[in-house]
Length: 182
Image (cartoon, rainbow, N blue to C red; front, top):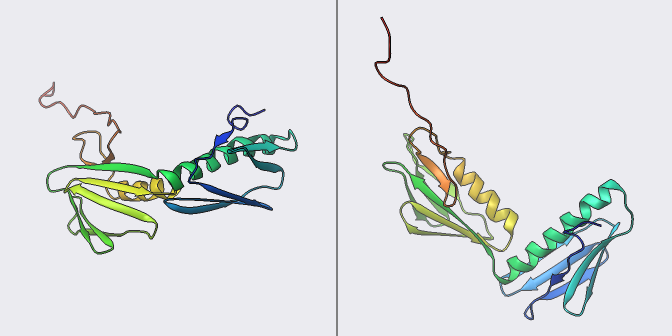
């Protein structure tokens, strides 16, 4: 049995869970999320807990068992608390500014980059070099954060670029000047 898949998921009081056929819908104070799951995976709700089990021990079904349990757990957390990622911009002149439903990002290019904010995502800019991305769907929050980071990935020599707030950039030594020669 999967170590993650066999753990039950606690349902908070303010959360509503509807399981019908091959679909599970979870609603909470942040909104609702739904997920279609494989027919070999069985999801049951009882006494404020969600239990995920599988019908066979085939390799594919063992893999899906833990996956669906993790996805459902993320849905429960997302509709109640939400998820947040924070990005920091490091470099002279690297700034972000909110313009309607776009973010104007200056990241060392000859032109500013306009990034459109998706529907279910909320982006806050506490200062000019910090971007906070939050939403109810963990996958969407991570995807938007990765797309913004790809505008200017951090480089290892000066550490300039857009990085996650908890990311550590391994620094490299530059070329040594005047070593040997002639």
